[in-house]
Amino acid sequence: MNVPTTTTASTLAAALVAAAALLSACASEGDAAKPDPSGATAPGSFAAERMRLLPLTRFSRERDSAGQWTDQLVCHIEFKDRFGQVTKALGDLRIELYRPTGSATDPDMTETQALIWNVDLSNPAENALMYDDLVTRSYIVHLGGLPAWLIAWTQGEGREPWMTIKATFSMKSEHDQEKRLEAVYRVTR
Image (cartoon, rainbow, N blue to C red; front, side, top):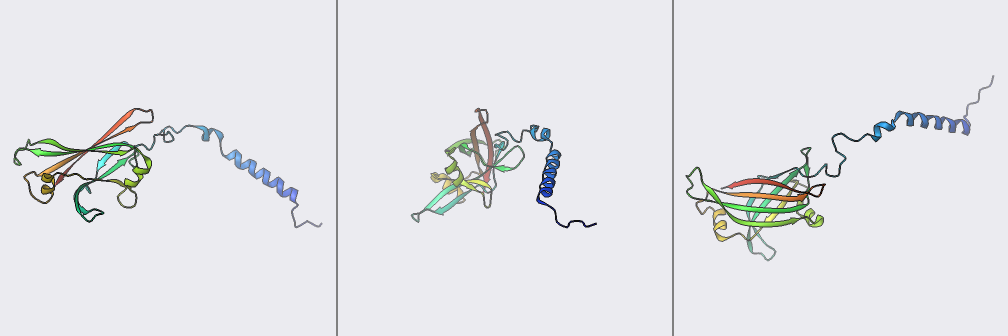
């Protein structure tokens, strides 16, 4: 008996249709349609839940575009989502600098608000310019307008043992409610 060695096109097409039917039966429609119980597919799943002023935050003296020395507070701000992953955030940032008052040996030394900066991070294009995704994965915010007493403190003068920086970030939640995140960092010499 002579058995053909080539397969006809119709036999091959029938085999492909049968294989496709078997493969589609393996993927259950019910599994694909089930919602994720963790809510990971919700629009706000990766929204910022925590904010931190990183220890890279510092006072800096740099030359501006005109070659003049300028003193700045450079804040490194990190946001994390509910999964603990670094994320970006759109909103308004308020940074406050507090100066200690009283004696440096007083354990109950109080602080007085000395400066306030408001930074608009609600515009996605401007927001992206402040984000360092290469090294620190944080927002780097340069704040100028430092008074003479603070510049002297950064150079080792003055009696204050530290400065406290408080950051407050306001953003809209996925339900259009205002959400606030806060972080505090103490800069010492």
